[in-house]
Image (cartoon, rainbow, N blue to C red; front, top):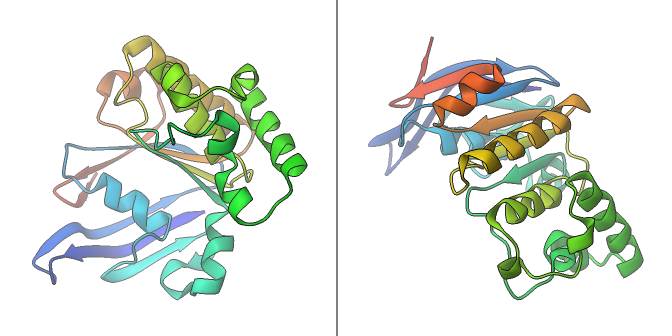
Length: 218
């Protein structure tokens, strides 16, 4: 599903490498924790999967596609296969939950009834269908994160990436969010969660990929 072959990623004209000779595979349907200290390269790793970045050297293959060879026209279709959840939620305060979840669909011209059906389906999945017309500032941190997860699930992605998704949540809410990721994984979605929270990693007993100073640690 996801394969890195001797991947290097440099910034600042090759003077600073975020990733160095990373070779690793993540199988279809796996749940993987990506961990390491701040600055280890976790976010860069995720951005390469999502094709927000391309490798400086080496190759990243996602769902059978070399990401460096994906053209602009094919990129939107490629990204439909991947849901992304961020630490800071990235919700628009002046838009309802429904509008936040379906913003991209509206831009693409999908009719409102279609968007409403899609939004109801994913909100039901995260247990927040009753928040359909609420605005993000009225929601708790845990609810906002679940809305962000619902948005990431809108296109039934093959892969779900989460970058420090519990970083702004307390312990109990963090466990709740991780259990939701488990449910998503149990339906066949490949899940990659970047986190430095050792207690979460120890509790959920998933495969761990560790980065340190840009290197993959064995």
